[in-house]
Length: 238
Image (cartoon, rainbow, N blue to C red; front, side, top):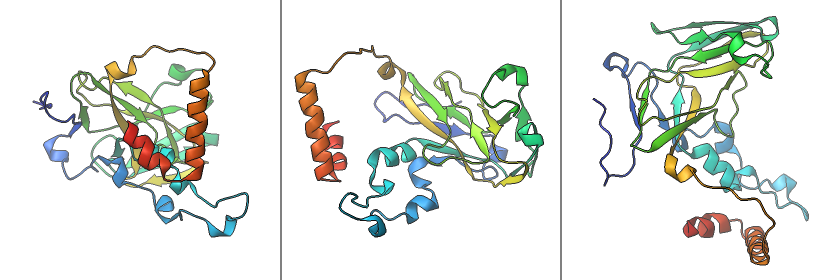
């Protein structure tokens, strides 16, 4: 039986698999622990592009970019998968190195008119059950700010507090024709838990008030004056 947190405990997301798959399939990890190499190697300031109209700062100093990349959890590819793409993407065959089904197909009629065109909808099989506390759901999305050039994962929201079973991940193969190997442990899907009642808010569209305009301008100036303002001040105001 899945054990979910008590009311007084910190909200927790739980990933479980069959005992015989523990240690065989790649395990979920916090997104902040799976930073891509290109981002780690990127300097915070690019001196070659530093001049009067450019401060040389790179995206490594952009907190919204980093926050998106590191929020939630990553479910990796459970085992190595080989995709064979042919006919301009219209044909996709798959093979894998584990005695569990890793890829299967959806019917093209299910996405008739989708911009993917002739590329067939497929799905990766996931062997981790995801469970969250009462009132919490999960948003499953492609990896934020680190695109996969072989497959395009389809996003979805699941009420993981009540649906405690396996969730597969639909995708389109977007790479050029050829053989493409995705290794075991390749980051595949980003999982972002959220409290449902917090997302149910009313909306309003109007012009800004003078006070709102002043606040907006002040925040913009402070951000431009100090690259660390957002990290130090804005977060402290949450």
